[in-house]
Length: 437
Ligand code: GDP
Ligand code: GDP
Image 1: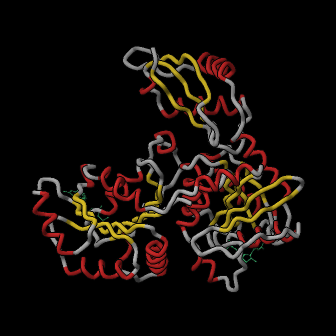
Image 2: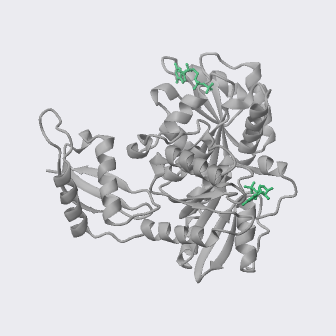
Image 3: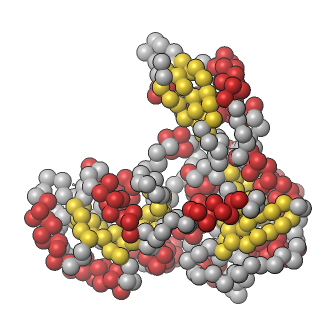
């Protein structure tokens, strides 16, 4: 599971600046993708040896309307679910009474605390640290988030404090030949209904579901001769009340499930308008490079007009993932589930497809002949050869010259060209350029 680090502190100390530095995606392609929405509170830091979830708890103050209440709940959840708390303070303002209030709250959680003293740029670091040592927090670090100074040290300090990596367990699970599937979606999209449907129909024996609250539950499922491992957070346990769905919804667990899965099924409620949160979930899955299937649930009982409207709206807003299959289902009645699982299998097959260098190079030549990248200062970027750079998602490494200047639009052209040639349905495709003479 991805470990979790929460940034906590007063408003204006620089939490969101720090969050942006830590979570800045290395993958420019995904960052440039039009239509991908980002959540400014949750992200994954990949600059260290091991990725971890970063939560910016910026929304701690002023809980008034319903949305804020939800945010405040998510903040508390974040502190609950965090492995390490980074307590951010402002070197310029010094140590304020509110800082002590927050620190006491954090101490009550019993979690490891790192005091990050931000905005030290232009200040005498030793004097600043001396002042803040009054907190009595053993782990203290000077920082300038805005100038990206000290952030690498922060990551270095965080990593050893995280629980042991369970990657080996994950790998072992992959070896049983099952496809790891995460079913994610907003509260009330129908996740638990779907999971219970899938499990109930095959009268599957649920292996030890006890699990602690922290661990997402993994349940084996066999259907039509295929084996799956469903990775779930709250959906598998039946809920007593509908409100519970909102209370139990955890962005962090969703991120962890996505990271642990091979294929992500994003469930959308056909009766609701597509929300930013739906797009954000899709954005997370893309950031992780996961294969993706979109399940449009509650298709039952809609008339033809409503169905047409729904499809039109989704096609318009989901152009950036037009490669992801949309399946209309009714989790309640069990319709469309065979098609859904078929789409999962196909997406997984695409994501793990074996690509061959010689053929990739031939395809690259064809793509280049068809349409060349625009000139850069009068010179055409040259693309010479290609080879596979890994699976899940399929990555194609292209060697050439002036590749730094290749525009995102041309990169997408290449991506689509390869996608078509190899029938890569339901998975992102990544192109990585290497400069070579
Ligand atoms: P948040 O409310 O805690 O999320 O704080 P923000 O990240 O929004 O930052 C508040 C203000 O502090 C902004 O104007 C930032 O530009 C500024 N700031 C953030 N980090 C630094 C820093 O390292 N040095 C200086 N001088 N200013 C910073
Ligand atoms: P979750 O929060 O995503 O796990 O959502 P639930 O599975 O708890 O479903 C939320 C509500 O939607 C419940 O009242 C379900 O009975 C209802 N629901 C789920 N799937 C369908 C469906 O396919 N059709 C209809 N009409 N209702 C559904």
